[in-house]
Amino acid sequence: MALKCSRCSQPGEAPPAHRVPFTPEAKAKVLGSICASCWKEWEQMEVKVINEYRLNFMDPQHRDMLQRSCLEFLQLDA
Image 1 (cartoon, rainbow, N blue to C red):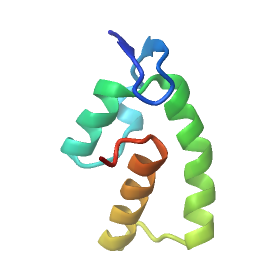
Image 2 (cartoon, rainbow, N blue to C red; image 1 turned 180 degrees about the vertical axis):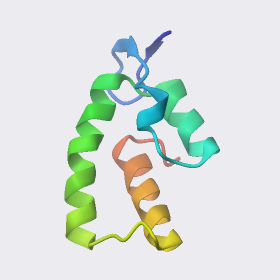
Image 3 (cartoon, helix red, strand yellow; image 1 turned 135 degrees about the vertical axis):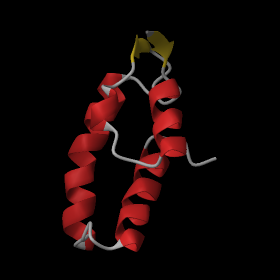
């Protein structure tokens, strides 16, 4: 399904749903408004965020921090 990306304003396809590992609400935001190209940019930034903050996915606070960082990067935090 084609959409107009809210980040880059270009038409495109949503990223694959299995690549968006967030809560159902955040996942719906991403899949409904972000193109696969911008999601790919986030996946590159995600590695940097994980390494810089030394995130541990066993800690729910760290998972929340990563999700917030993603939504900010994709300009969906409003």
